[in-house]
Every structure is written in structure tokens, then in C-alpha cells.
Length: 492
Image (cartoon, rainbow, N blue to C red; front, top):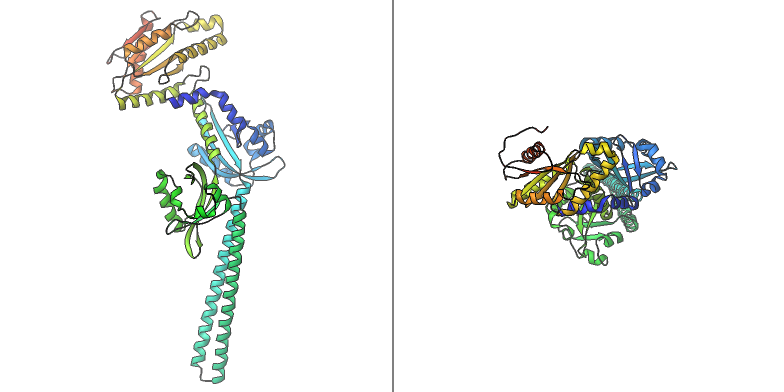
């Protein structure tokens, strides 16, 4: 077992409960069909409902029925096991709000399918971004319309001039020439109005962006130098002021491992692509790396093709999501009674340790231990006492193992030990110490098999299982080492 996984296990359910209770994001634990089992305080506050009410209403009662995105998001989660989308909820007072939603499906140690939903109210950010897009679209439509009008009038002026030149009647020619001059004056006036409107539009756009709660920055497509940033963007990038940020280039804030993909995205954006709600990492000017969500599109700034980015710092949320998802993954691999690995967690850990031993060439040994006559213990003292015994045994054994060792409950009263760096003889010594610590005068039989550096995990476990069979067959309460290549036998 890796030290990282050991650290997560050491945190335990209490740490996860603290994250759940104090997260600034809403967190729901649910069944994939929409039933909700638990809601944290942040979810209750955002939805303006009690936890009991949220659980009673379920997904159908909380989602805005008029939002068609819900159906697609649920289908996507069914297809790949997770989804991330902006969806609309309804509060207790009936008012809607936009939420950034992440949901993942997982299985508990008992094999039950559950889902975790993490959401954050982004109504203000979405409204600001939509307003920026509407203003940008309005100005683009107006410029296109003005261009078409001017183009048509220019053609009419040329036609009038041409007709005046061809006319043999001096009076007609004079009237046509005056008409052409008048059209030219109209074109000049329209152009002046357009320039004024564009200046006013750019002014409105700049004022809106300056006051926007969304960090917005613009950099040139040719050399990637920043040419504009609103105050929120200056703060997000970690610059002292506007001038400091404008002395830098956009590629300076991109982590090295993302540079190639980022440059490809810039080329796509300059070709007309739009990037929406893409999560990535940037490096602030003070060296701090943060996680951001980015919307990006091409804009013309100062007559040059540029990239405009709208950013949202989601570092805190990303860290909370990572902690919650890791805890869910840990729960899915942990036996709820003993806190050891369950069968799924054992299989994953054994495969990982075998791969590490193959890379380093070190020894690795597994042991399978089965408590002797444990059914009689349960029948005599009751199942609650039997469960307590298994918890005490697992706690004692875990306390005597190294952080690199793994202990798993393979089923019932059967446990597995994975001991990287140990030969069969060393493993037998460790097992002897552990069996001496079994409480209540209980005993166990143990089969040991050392990895031969060729077989797979299943074959290795089969050899340990055969050794266990021999220990049981020989009278129990003993340790048997299985030699490589031993004939396969079935356990009773």
C-alpha cells in the first residue's frame, strides 16, 4: 500500500465528514435514479430547504423542470459514470439559479451504486458573461449592417456617376452628378455615425468589463502579449497593477506540461473556435499555480486579432472535489467493518505492488489467513461479538505492519497480507508474530506464497490458497509455505 493511500485511510470517515459539513460547495449524496440520501449545510443554504426536505424532493423536485440540460447531463453520467455541466435549480421560494455541477457515480464496499453531486451557484458569473456576449454580438451585427448599407450606397453613387458621364442631356447629367455627390455625403455621414457608435460601443463594453466580477484579459494572437485586463484579471494573475501584467505574455502563465495543448487551442481560437468552461491550470506571476475555468474567443482589439479569456478561480473547489472523490474511492476499496482493504481494494493494491516489484526486482510475498472455527465463536457469543472480534484483530494487525504492507479482508473471517520486500521465510516470521496477537485464545491457519516474478496476481493467490488448504488439512493453527509449481488442489 502506498504512503499516499495510507495517509488517506488514516484520515478516516471523520475527516471526510468535516469536509462534507464545512464545504462552501453544495454536496449531495444520492442514488443515481435521483433519490437523495444526504445534503450538506451549503446545499441546504443554496436550495433554501432543510436536509429532510431535499431528501424528500429528490433530484426531480430540485431541478428546474424548464431546463433541458438536465436530461442530457443525466444521460452522460449514465454513459461514462461522471458529468460536469451548468444546470438550473429551483430554490425553496421558487426562484431559479444557475449552478456549476459535478457528479460522479461510485460503488460502496457493499456493492451499492451511489452518486455524489457537488454544485456551486454561478448565477452572477453566468449573467455577467452573457451580458458581455450580448453586447459583443450587438456591436458585431450593427457593424455588419452598416457595412452592407455603405457598400450598397457606394454602388449607387458609382452607377449615378457612370450614368452622368454617358448622358447626352446636360441637364440630366448635372442632376445625376449632384445625386452622386449627395450619396457620397450620405456615405460620409453614415461612416461618421458608425465611428461614433463604435467608439461608444467600445466605451460601453470597456465600462462593463471593468466593472465585471468575471476576470477578463485580452492578448494578441501574433506575439501573445497581454494588451488588456480588467481589475479582477490583474488580481487573479497576481500582478501588482495593470502595467505589470501588460509587460508579460500569455504563454508565461501556462505550466510547461500544458504548453503544447494550449498553443493548439490558441490557434483554434484565432481560427474561430470558442472555448467554453474548460478547466485548466495557470501560474500566477508570483509563482503560485491555481486551477481556473476558462471561456475564450477571438476578438479584434486595436485592429488586431486577439484572444479574449474570461477566467474563474476554482482552486478551492477543485481541491475539495479531489478530497471528496478520493474519499469516495477509498470508501469503495475499504471494508466498512474492519477498515482494511475489501476484495476490490486488495486486488488493485496487489496488482500495483506486483508492478512495483517487477520494476525493482525486489521480493514480494502474500499470505492468506483464515480464522479457525470462527463459526463456533459467532454461534456461542453472537454476531455482534464476532464483528467486534474482527475489528479488534484487524486493528491489532494493522498496528504491527509497515506502511508499505497491505491488509485486506477477503471475505468472512479470511484476511490477506501483502508484504513487499519479503521472502517467504521472512513473511513466515511476520505471520508468526501476528498470529500470537490474536485475541480471545482464537487461532488461525495461514498459507504463504512468494511471488516467482512471472505469474500473475490470480496465480499467486491460488498458490497461497493452496497452502492455506494444506494448513487446514494438517490440523489448523499452523503456517504453510507453498512452493512454486505445486499441484493445484481445491479448498474444502
